Every structure is written in C-alpha cells, then in structure tokens.
Length: 243
Ligand SMILES: [Zn+2]
Image (cartoon, rainbow, N blue to C red; front, side, top):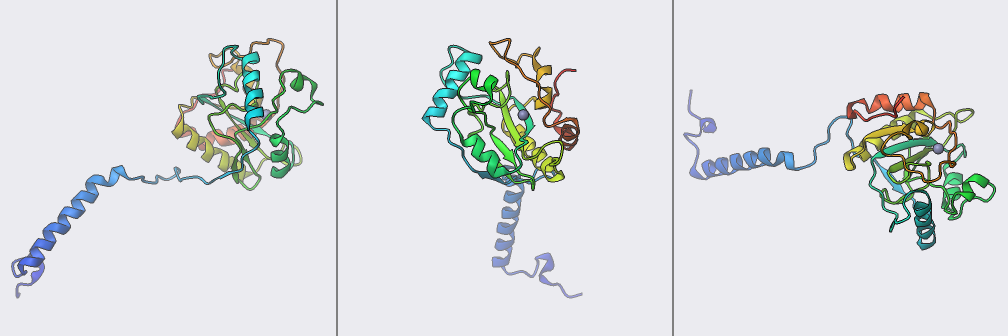
C-alpha cells in the first residue's frame, strides 16, 4: 500500500501545522463547552410576552400603603424576594378582559371586603392565556396583590378560565409548568401552591397578615390543575402547603 497523507508521514509541513492548530481548536472548544448555555430536555427557554399594566407612581404608593397596613409598618418599598409561586384562574373569560381589569390602579369598590382592606387593585405577575401564551404584567420582584398573607414572598400566575365552562387547558398546564421551571431556576422557590390551598400556609414562616379578620376562601385553580402541573415539575422537588 502506498503511503498517503492520512498518517501524516507524507504530509507537507504546512498541513502538519494546520493539524496541530485544528487539534488545539477542538480541545479549546471541548474545554469551554460547559461555559456556554446548553439546552437540556425539558429545560427549553420559554417565551414570555411583556404586556405591562399600569404600575406607575400612584399604584406603587398604594402598594406600599397596603404593605404597611398588612405586613410591615416600617416597609420602605414594594420589592419582594420570591420564594413561593401561587397559581390561580381568572374566571374572567379572556386575556384582554383580564388585562383591562388588572390595569386599573384602584380596587373595585363593589368588592367591599377587598376595597376596605386596601385601595390598590389586585393583579398578578403573569397571565397564561388559554393557548399557553405567557404574559408578564409587572416586574417579578415587585409586589402584586393576589393572595392574602403571601404577597410579600409570592409570584402570582393567573390562568384565563375557570372550573366550569372554561376549564383550564393542557396548554396552560404545560405553560405553567415551564414558567415554574423558569422561575425556580431564577429565584430560591421552595413552595408551589394553588390559591385554594393558601390557608394551609397560615402556620408556616411565610404567612404574614397583620389583620386576623382579613381572610377569604378560594377555589382556584383546583386540585386537578395543581396535580397536573406538579407532575410536570416533580423533578424540582418543590414543597407543597402542609396538610
Ligand atoms: Zn386566585
């Protein structure tokens, strides 16, 4: 067999130099690979559509007032350090109607208990539409009013629908799970709960409500939805409210 260039013996010097350089590049890439983001199965980047509601100076002032009344009289800002994620459903049947409602700065006067407990309107950081589109309505580390006793540590995720004619969809289950995964990678999230489970958090270190008479009963989003979402993020080993 005639010798060829494949073993390098008959290779001109320039090709030998090139081979050394190429080997070096391959080795460099292999060493540097962990530095660059690698997508793992089930850890795909998610798409979030920013659609901010009015959270200007007036709403920030009202949020701080709520915080001083219900959580800490010494509070100086509306920043939160997220440790919980609370899932909800809207009952309001469309994303647009939900956004319009949350965009109002002042609490609805017709909701007497709500309005009496604070003038700042309810909202949530995220709204997931029925097709799974994820909208972000305000910065994740600002306080939204969505769950008594836990607003100071919880990110709220609303889902357009209810538990009757507009049952939550498989697309919303998948989107909520992806969002939980995204948030758990970003913040030290320890507990995932449904709004209907929030009173089981009363004896935990997270619960903070200065008015013992201020509480309500919720049914959203329901056990079926929570079970489905939890199954998709079981590998995160997030806690649940005590039984
Ligand atoms: Zn709710």
